[in-house]
Length: 307
Ligand code: COA
Ligand code: MG
Image 1 (cartoon, rainbow, N blue to C red):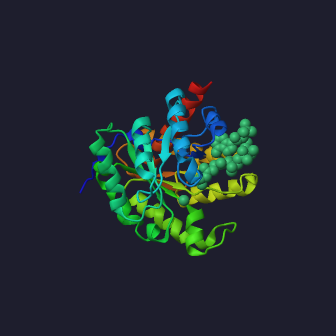
Image 2 (cartoon, rainbow, N blue to C red; image 1 turned 90 degrees about the vertical axis):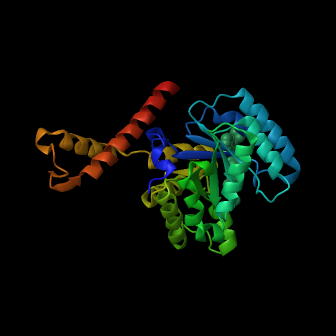
Image 3 (spheres, rainbow, N blue to C red; image 1 turned 30 degrees about the vertical axis):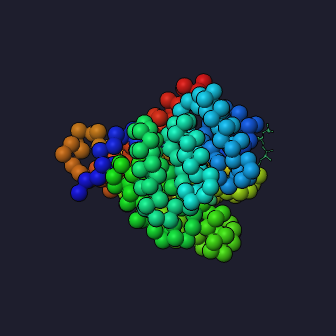
């Protein structure tokens, strides 16, 4: 059975989401910084980083900021308050007025939470392009990750990516913050697997300690090793580390070029499996290599446009 997602253009798969910086919509100084940062995406937060009495001011800030600011290649995502909260309707009105690339829903625990927001967007007659991202950050969210991700089988649900939120998950489960996150790895991998099963991107949780860039780099590398596409960031100092860890490494690039060259040799024609310097490579590795090189091209094109 094929899904609507199977028919999405290749550009979707080539989207860069290495560095997903969150910025409190209430903070004008921080908002004014993002257009100069080398992040792939920006989450404008109306939820936990904005005090209840400041929500209206934050929405007004955001509307004004997005109207005036061209963020170039950076994807724009607005994180709204939970659908059961008093702020949700006004937050969604702000989203529909701003038309970002996506709306990020906090504490998603059931597929219906995604579907009902997708329906609300449909009813508003908003542009096709508005996608839904879901935060997976509660015990039930982790347990139901596969059911939630299965919304991604139909484009109608608009679901595009998961973002893991470990601050809430640690609070709810009692698992303390610790270097290496070893106790959390099974849950993180469950979210990655669920996302991949239904063609979603998946973004690793924030690291709170933005001064310790060595620990941050180690956590990014761990996230990359687990299969995440990128990391949610809280501070500009974290952007370069995430871009490096989640971008193709020098070794990855050299290997991808070797695979492409090996399959391009005349004696490889008609072969599905070949010997490349003592290692077996298959056509599936060629697809992976071409994908990686296309992403690299994407990163390089972006650099050219930025200069
Ligand atoms: N995006 C853009 N700019 C940011 C930023 C962010 N997320 N975080 C900090 N900056 C800016 C600051 O405005 C500051 O610039 P300024 O000196 O011109 O004001 C500069 O970077 C250096 O910031 P620094 O002094 O190191 O930190 P801070 O005390 O201003 O802010 C935090 C620290 C943690 C409060 C801030 O980084 C933040 O709010 N992060 C996002 C938190 C969030 O969204 N949480 C919810 C999801 S987990
Ligand atoms: Mg949260």
